[in-house]
Length: 203
Length: 175
Image 1 (cartoon, each protein chain N blue to C red):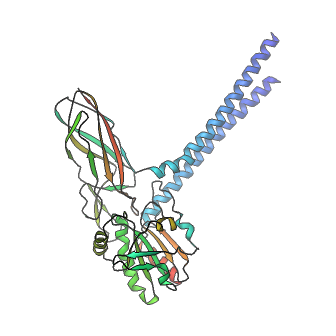
Image 2: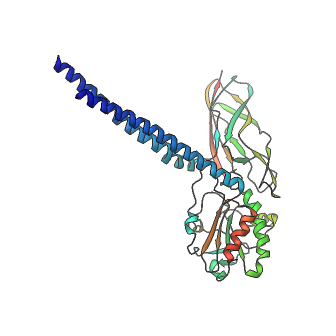
Image 3: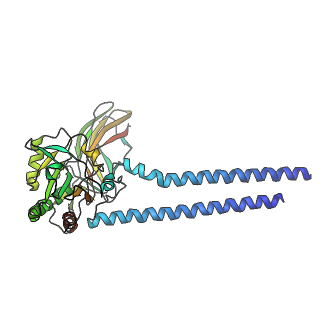
């Protein structure tokens, strides 16, 4: 009887070990697949989940919700609030002078700001350099990149309010009702950016 | 005799049970380490690793050692001389003293990296994969430690992480 019990325990133990091995293998394969999908997304420029295990932005959680209100100062020292643009579609783009992909996409924002000006599109660039970055350097960078839309200097709370990821660029597409309808992390393709803009404007 | 056999069977049974429990606990821990732990560890990753941890040099003589670094696959960092002045150059700052003097550094050339394939994005000058910085040192006899920091800024194709600093610590043995 005891021999049978011992045999049963051995069988169960062996079974558990096999199960653990198979489960582990399956999970690893799934993790690999997820990682590969992320890399493909980045290469295609789609909503740039940045590969390499970066933490997910909570910004996605803002989709469908009211964009957090803010009042920041632009490069000329003028106060700019999100509320100033009530009733108009607004793109809130977080960028930094050291961010190459930001430099890639910002001229597209400039182009679309002109193209959809008749529809009231507003683009706001919120700088994410260190708070002690000289204003003139940010202005020089914006000029070099070729954008004329308002560049806003960050305060200490906006990153938290928008639950930003620890990488850039990150953009929130806010419709005329103040709702975040799209969110992109990493530089999207130009076509995808325009699609997001058109969706934001209800076109 | 029968009692002895029974005791042996009991001990074997207990041993098997304990092994099963250990296997279960280890299995569960392994799952945690493999999955739950990866995200947290990855989040802390700086995407650049120092591969060199020690070097033997001739005592009292100027000598060039190579410090090897590795950038994570899929990522790049700007070279020491990025073409775009807005971008943050990779800079290795080493401390002299404590038995080893740093007399000079030589950075490798960067590789061309097109920003935004299929776009008119600029061509960057970057380090990818493994890169080596040559450091001219003069060390005393015996053991000393070369310390410093690598300042860099990592990106992938579509996004960039803020500038980071990697601590550098290499054991130098002057013989």
